[in-house]
Image 1 (spheres, one colour):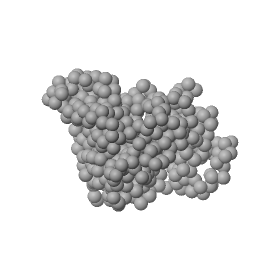
Image 2 (cartoon, rainbow, N blue to C red):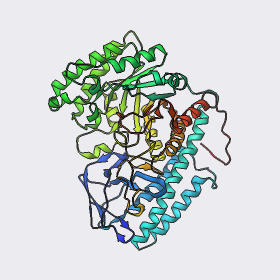
Image 3 (tube, one colour):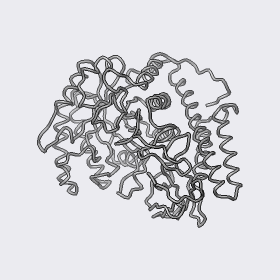
Image 4 (tube, rainbow, N blue to C red):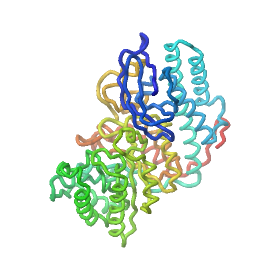
Length: 512
């Protein structure tokens, strides 16, 4: 059992809203357990032996309301101080990534190094203070500085790699894409798309395509496929299989526990979609979210069976035209494994496919943050570290959905000392979401993502805000005539990469 002491301004916290809390084991893989708050402590009952870490949404002051985690910790009768353990993990992350990225020779005057040293000193002061309230105070101060230090380290490393990747050559003409809401008509956005974006991602929701059994509504997809074909815009489409709750037709609910019937109905659906569009699609996302087991639940063998089926159907249809296939990961951080629904960690699922000989051409990641269908907010170092883990797969990576909203729900920020977040449990980065925060986040995320040598394309989460958007306010435009600051920032950065960057001129001593 793990115990974590939490505090407010008066001492031990009298209440503490546990939001997005989960347990992790080695390699940041979620483990099952029960988490509750009692009398100033967060109590974690693990269902497996060994050390574990606690991840949860935490108000980290100026860093934002983010998903953070502790180091792996052994069971202890004495409670750990939560803020102190969150700071310990972030200080350790800085050292680990310095070693992994060979960034130890950063100048001591670099902001990342100065902030890390401040965080380390505050952590040490808390470690030597026997008053747990004082330790908590030092821990929160240390955590703020440590998060900023790791983010600055991630951006310094990204700038080095970006110049290394594009020193002598520009980015390819398949670098920047945007996700399209099929309910929008193409005409108001035609000029913008033709001028600024290389690729389109066209979602193929089973629920929208077949609102009633046996009845199909092809018109929204047809008009976008036709427009893209006429304007020579490559299309990434899918996922063909997506059993997340917001993608399944309501009429399929009756077959939730009947795998054979579900497979037969899915086969019929797939053959129709692939036959209609196979001549126009450059990359098929064949499956997304199968490993999550969020609504329809499958055994690992059934996950593999469905993936193999759709992969074969696409390859047979594309036999006379070279089209690529892709597996998408919708929960890349993997906390869904801790929910006890027999879900499979993302990298384990991919390894299962490889072992079974199910070959695809690339992988896709969805890492959009925000309310609705978005993920809970994380800092940029957390995102960078996650992207690094997919480097070992040795296949190109398409970031098929990345973005943050330009506004969030109204309400108070909460009490930073008590870890109280706003009503919206998706959290935020640095400040509550706004057009300025959206464009600042995009400016950092775009360069960081494309600095990774295995990242091939970057698709923003939404072209334009729309009432049916599953992540509200994540669009680059609020309407066809109004571009948000994030849009202008994205295009500015894309144009920067249309020509070689040349060698990086460093103010300090850096070795990579």
